[in-house]
Length: 51
Image 1 (cartoon, one colour):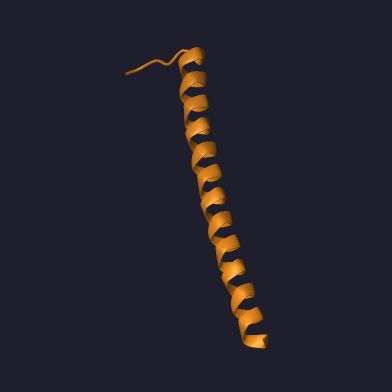
Image 2 (cartoon, rainbow, N blue to C red; image 1 turned 135 degrees about the vertical axis):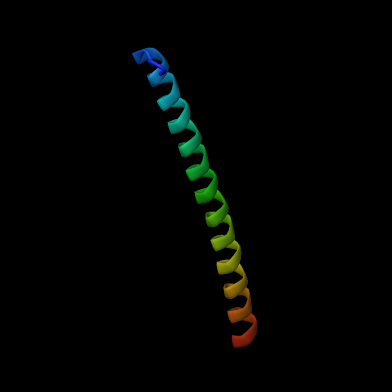
């Protein structure tokens, strides 16, 4: 049986939260970049097609 002191629990939780936030941020960043690239490609193709 392991007995965790509040400090160690807090440390584990903060670490998990930090990792979770980092992953979320990276996912947002990557998806945002992909979306902007896709939007740019669509705009370019629309301009080319209309012209």
